[in-house]
Length: 336
Image (cartoon, rainbow, N blue to C red; front, side, top):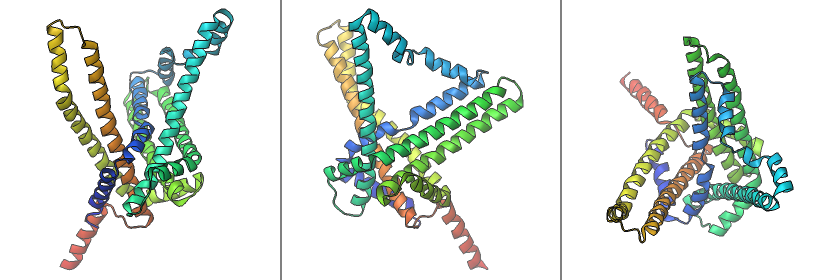
């Protein structure tokens, strides 16, 4: 029991490193990350802390032009006045929607494939890329439905709580600031709960062949029974995420520094020939490094949660804090 976390992490690393074809799934599964979503939450609360309502935040996004891009009125005007511009605008919209849909499909399929592959390979069984991908397609709709439900619920909570806070936050009293802090903590807690429910419900759908709502109910039970353990593992992965990010930066600096120095020398010597090509090469290498590190870590992270789910479903896990408490109790009993 004492090496529970280390065993999970070691087994996950072994699967991730030995079967590097999983990294392709990891690359697309990365697009399901919630970093940008939580950044939006923090930004909304920062605006409200300055006395601005949630409508101000929404108006900020509207002013970026993202909504006007898809304005039907503008499209109709273009259709009547400029057929060529209308065709180009319509093609651009359809192309963006097609690419976004394709990325979402590949991200969901890749997540499913990773969950199944992680458990199968951890159990020393064989699974091919084709088999994993086929299962991802087979379980696509329920996992997509689960992700839509959890994101809609979280977005609803964000809007509702942010609206309530915005009604009182304009008052410069300690009550307003206390309400701001409490509401932010509530949203953070809800985000953590929904994150774990999504992870474990996806595992139930893929590994136990359950429906969406049954999986959510089972996921809630596992999370509730092992809340401290889940938070501890989440904290460990958070620290590992920071470490991997630092390693990626160091590696990028090591690889790119010769090219950057060459670029600076060419600029100082006013050598314009090949400068553009060098910039493109630097950008491509930087993106490749980000993709490799990101894909590998996503594969590792999904593998960790998948193996942890299997252990918790079989009731073989116990929190580190609980183990320490149990050891203290055992020693106290021995002394008596």
